[in-house]
Length: 117
Length: 118
Image (cartoon, rainbow over all chains, first blue to last red; front, side):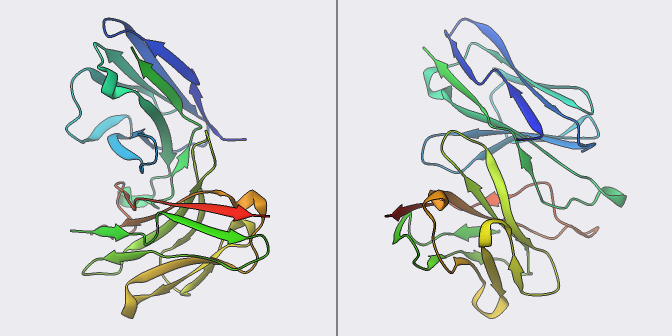
């Protein structure tokens, strides 16, 4: 069983819809991530939050809007998406040690499979 | 800039045979190295990692990998393949952080799909 929980597992939305993907972890990790994965490809980093603050935005279009309400939750708000945004969206978390040191070890959820019609 | 190369996008082995998945990295300093596995319709799971110290690292499910600095390689092996090993395997690197430890930005290879034949 994964300790990073993502909901929903599947989402179908139209290009004018607004929806959100949710991620939750209770491992006490202070870094949380959103990745996008297309079929047969490696995950692509989208956003990183460290101590609830956005630390990395990989030039992601504004139709994707991340939010980190607290240290356990991470949301990805979706609006006016395009069919090419259809993909598996993976949430991950990791420990942050003293002086902001990262272990590099990510714990992934099972993903939310998004289809944009 | 860091990069990761996985030779062979598809590898097929017979059940009970040796598994060898290749990973080479380019870096001016030894990075932190990882192997992740992704089963169908699931997220990624860490198999093993190399940070410092012993260059032969053992992971879950009988996998191990050896860090060879001279060859800039971190190949993944398993002595005897099992049907349940069929999955996508990703090698990943993180450059060392100036404060110590890894960075929060993993660089993934393109992946190797392992098929295990009965």
